[in-house]
Amino acid sequence: KQEVTQIPAALSVPEGENLVLNCSFTDSAIYNLQWFRQDPGKGLTSLLLIQSSQREQTSGRLNASLDKSSGRSTLYIAASQPGDSATYLCAVTGGGNKLTFGTGTQLKVEL
Amino acid sequence: DAGVTQSPTHLIKTRGQQVTLRCSPKSGHDTVSWYQQALGQGPQFIFQYYEEEERQRGNFPDRFSGHQFPNYSSELNVNALLLGDSALYLCASSLAGRGSSYGYTFGSGTRLTVV
Image 1 (cartoon, rainbow over the protein chains, first blue to last red):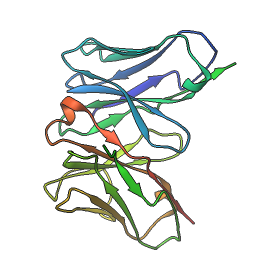
Image 2 (cartoon, chains in turn brown, purple):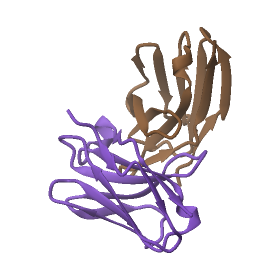
Image 3 (cartoon, rainbow over the protein chains, first blue to last red):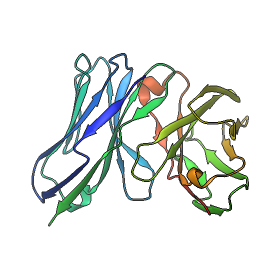
Image 4 (cartoon, rainbow over the protein chains, first blue to last red):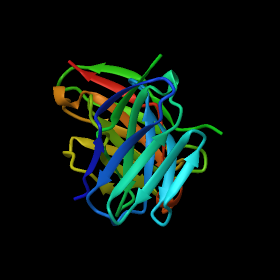
């Protein structure tokens, strides 16, 4: 059974700091890994999708890496802003095309 | 290009009642998946519909059932509501066989409160 873990559970940083969120998964037989952002009480917004054959994806200030063999992914956020405050979820797609999620990292960027 | 739309946005029900949640997938998508997200937790997979049939099911009791219509929209039904069913219910759409390639698009969710 696939299990996804995200560390840390919560993170508070000052504005402008670069930060890294971690995600690990137990079964390396995945099709892809997707990072989502979730604002309080809202739905999920897809940030980055990394295919199993890829090593990283970039979008603006965000960079996600994937090491499938070790079961790890990181989401790097450069020059953090208060608007980045949200919960960040990673999810892997495995057999059956369903997503298995971690419990998320709650990020707060302070002025 | 419309994204995934869910209705209603909020709902309050009494224990033992039944509820129906609705989802319209993103234009061009034909597969709909439902997830339950309890407070402070990651979403949990309920089931997935494609070609009007349930293709996969997570670890949820039979009280949870669904339907997909010819226009690809979907309903989630929950019978005999329990307090523990209170959660945010998320709908995700994808293209059949391509969820692994193009990922999933989520709606804003329905917040269900059971009292």
